[in-house]
Image (tube, rainbow, N blue to C red; front, side, top):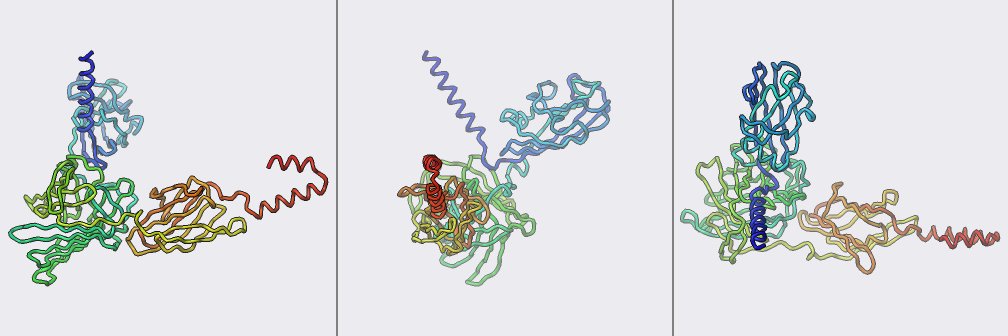
Length: 504
């Protein structure tokens, strides 16, 4: 009995350990895989003039394996094609993926499939092979063992941003894009007293078609300004990961502007956005922060999630430690530390001295407003509380939708609450500038349904679509029904009128 309980406990510990080892970040590595196919690798070997090759990519964030397989010289048409495993060369194994069902049996075979965790491990461990069968060789005529290697030395540089709704505002545990956020770090570097001031500005900048937040960094040495950079960031709403779209750099000497070294923009000279920091970091995850070939190529690796760091601003625990390197600066390596809910607390030898957190959205001053819409010819007042200027407020009865514009100081946090239950029944779909948003709260107050919508200020078109316009029978319709009932009664159709009244 005691032995069984101990076995279960040990099993759970092992499972937890395996789960932590196999956990993958939101953006994992891309591996390039190849195989060379011939008859000598078959078990037993096959005497054939057939040969082939395969090029594959494996994305560990989705476990998707994509392939292109070419072959020629077979004894006849291919009758089947598979990925087999797990097995090393010289050993046969079962079918893992039926290539023929996905790609057909003609060369080239192009296709993709999502692998299970076990299949992915077999692939990356070199224990999967491709086998192409023919009628003359039903067990396989040409075979090739698959080998894989991580691309870009394992540092991810493509983040599939087409799958993200990007916003210039927001935050994750380690990085803020909300105006009002400020940090000051101080320390010594090369014998000089260095101060770094980081401020999230109330400004946005369009970079490569994306509205980004401007974060200013001012660095001084011994009290003399040496650099001002305006950095451009955007948050992926789906993941809360924050991406780096470039920077404008001004370098100073003796108070004079002398250069712009290190400046880059996504979309210019083959530069692309990098990932500045993931929302859910995993130890060992490696990625590019800057993807500007020959100009800015900072890389990062997650080293630890539980550092303890002492700074003049206080002691911080559960700190994220990131190692940064740059292939353009041979041997250059720095460590940055980010505290949950605070952000950057140490950059190399500079440590946090003071910080100011941004104002929370629910602390915004919401002013009461009244807007009017028309339902079936009757005006209905709608109560709102908003931090924004509201205009063009109207109801589209046919499409069961309220639309309006909001405006406010660009880049600041904004929120509008609307007593919507008197007009539309839920569930509700909310869009901002035509894009569906989930930054919505639905609550009840004084028996009324209230919907709250949060956003970053600029001029936005908002819409709220419900499932039904309320009231179903506005005053004018009720009057018509009452008049009809009265006519029926006057005509002496009391039985019909009574039935009608009972039904209603």
